[in-house]
Image 1 (cartoon, rainbow, N blue to C red):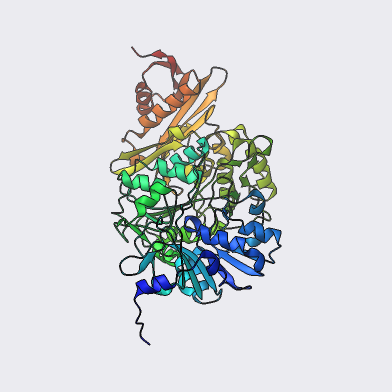
Image 2 (cartoon, rainbow, N blue to C red):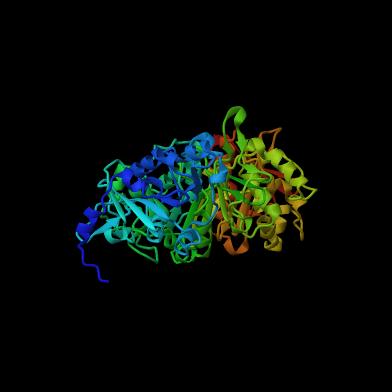
Amino acid sequence: MAKTSYWADDFVEKQRTAKEAVKMIRPGQRVFIGSSCGEPQYLVKTLAEASSVFTDLEIVRLLSLERTPLGLIADKTKSRSINIRSFYLGSGKARGLAMNKRFITPVNLSAIPRLFKSRQLPIHAALIQVTPPDDFGWMSLGVSVDVTLSAAFSADLVIAQVNPRMPRVLGQSFIHVDDVDVIVEHEEELLATEPLPETEAANTIGRLIARLVDDGSTIQIGLGATSKATLLALADKNDLGVHSQYLTQDMMHLFSRGVITNRRKGFNEGKMVASAAIGGEVLYEFLHDNPSVDFRPSDYVNDPTIIARHHRMVSMNVALAMDLTGQVAADALPRTYFTGVTGINDFIRGAALAEGGKSILMFASTSGSGEDQTSRVVPSLGDTAVVVPRGDVHYVVTEYGAVNLFGKSLQERALAMISIAHPEYREELFFEAKEMGLLSEDRTLSDSIHGVYPVKLEEVREINGETVVIRPAKPVDERRIQEHFYNLEPDDVVSRFFHEKHSFVRDDLEEMLEVDYVKDLTIVAVVGEFGFGKVIAMGEYLLNEASNMAEVAFTVNKAYQGRGLGKLLMRKLAEAARENGLAGLFAYTAPHNRGMINLFKTLPYKIKTVFEDDMVLLSCRFDTMET
């Protein structure tokens, strides 16, 4: 039978008080509650107040700030009155409640709408929050589309709190008055997040990640202090795009400054696509009727095949801890409010499939402080749930450096993870790795394991149209450095080692590989993708403690000779040595090695030349400038 009533009349007829609306819910039913900052607080508060009349009411929700006591009621009544099924482990909840893992249902976010629509998880009632209807009867879900839209369309009973403070967000965010059963008009402030603490570790991690994000990338980022610092570090980028689970105020600021333009996304260009917003009033005002914003449900935004269609898709998510093989735990972290598990795998896999895509996991190397401080790099996750399997992990960043685990052996992974752990825990991790069989028995511990990677020595140069990264060597460079020597011309090998050499086993290269970045330092020039690059040149110094002078040596692949790489490496070694308190540099070379002699002459110091037998000793002191 055709509908004859006008939607505006239906809107009036469907109006009820919150108490009347909640009474329509029956014991034993499953009730969905709109998530995150779109939570209908007034309806939820009324439901909590009436909880004593319910038995076996199951609350289904994605994410909550826990401003209402439903979880505490469930805990207190041992779930006889209310049982919580949370698809997202957020950390804005009470400390004790955060430990109640029985409330958590682990599932990838992209799959939740299918649970609702297929009635595998039937929703009997949905409590949602919407804008007032427009001239055609459409109401926007505003800041929370995510799984709320599918829950509303799948529910037997839809109760909508109409709040004029909810922004009207464009995209696939609308539900019609005809599709709602009960209207409760109530104006209240939307939930907002509190300011996140700024830490030096987060800022360092942000700067390291910014080096991995190219201009024109499409970004997704998790929530928390580290994510905030990362977005701030992207302020110098150009033409970034957004396809992300959450839109935040920091993204808004990047858009306002012209950093985010969405012009080069390759898909949904011109639009910031997300499924929800987390922030405050300024962000909500920005979202209202903004044609640059396109909110879609989670089965679209989190679909790996959709994510993979974006140009240079970069996913950046926060981990709780990682073990030496690369397995990831990613439950809620203190003071990050929302970081969790459900969207991470969708974006990690989608980004990895995208052309030029990258998936990045970030975390501070330690948690707690003082006696309570612990390492977030652990030998094994033990009983902790593995959220991201090791095979899906690519880039990992802490304040001590960045590594790429993709395609690496377990030994290479263990060395990489130890190198970015807090120095205080590296020795313990090293011996644990040997005990677990992750490192060969012949590996020995040296002082270099405590070295702090000097990020400031990193530099990117364009040389003859090719991007060359100049940086300190890392433990994970072992195989690349060996390959560099095997690729040298025989004459260059003799110039470096003073005799013919046909094998470059690890024991022979130990001094170059195990550096503490102060007494010994190796700098490499690398071309190619991060984590898979080729060493084309390297320079190293090794301290002679008796004289406080460091001996230097250089090698450059024949194809890259004559491009100024030796001069660049010499300059960086001299700067680092001087800053590290060394008195100067010296080198032994053959009299006919004009390259090395000329290289020394590029330094701004007085060069001393001494002939010893059939060799030349070149030296300079940092306190004797060339006049």
